[in-house]
Image (tube, rainbow, N blue to C red):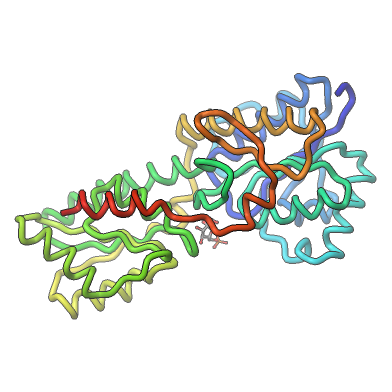
Length: 321
Ligand code: F6P
């Protein structure tokens, strides 16, 4: 291992805990006798040859910081075969022996392509969407969930004072896990996710159920991919005559200091990614399974759509009765 050069980048939507993962990759690499490099702005920065050496002190003070000190991007250029070939040449010219990418499914696709071009790559799941397979949870999901819970508690105070219904829109274009878990954690009356068809009548019925047992407020949590909060609020108010207000949490969910859970998860995954590279693994993603960090093929992590836990969806419905 001595003298090996490992690089790390963050890509796609940022997620709280990415910095903790970068810190872990850098320090684990140096502890094993290697050299660490950061690549700025994800794959876009890779194509610009934007490397910087990272020493032990360069990743000090970032464990509790949200966002990513490396910067991130959603690179269109890198999606082409030419882009991947150019990136691979840059990594080879730099003498990089292994690349750790931190991000979601788009990031993993890129890493898989790079591994076929002869660059050893390992992925770490960093996305608030928690929509990659091969892991029970991704870095940033727990923090985003807690951010939503904090916001929902504030919304509930004003909602019950005014006896109002609130529609709270959370992130998740194709995947409703964040909406489902936050809805369950906040006691939502109704949870709308892209994976499960719904009707306005269902939503009205859920709200009516709470009102019938004397509830002073109602909360509908909707994933951005299931409905737009403002349209839903208008329809709901017209259909059921409720006093409806709307909250769109937006990018607030992606920011903030990572939770203790995410810091530990990121630290463990970063170290595992470096171990995997040292062992000669490539084209794999680190995951958390049964409380242990493991690796599985990158392709398995993004090839199949992440499936929503229907048992948890049903539980949320039962507990909202
Ligand atoms: O991938 C994370 C995510 O936050 C999604 O939940 C959301 O749909 C998307 O990113 C928003 O992306 P952007 O910040 O590019 O608008």
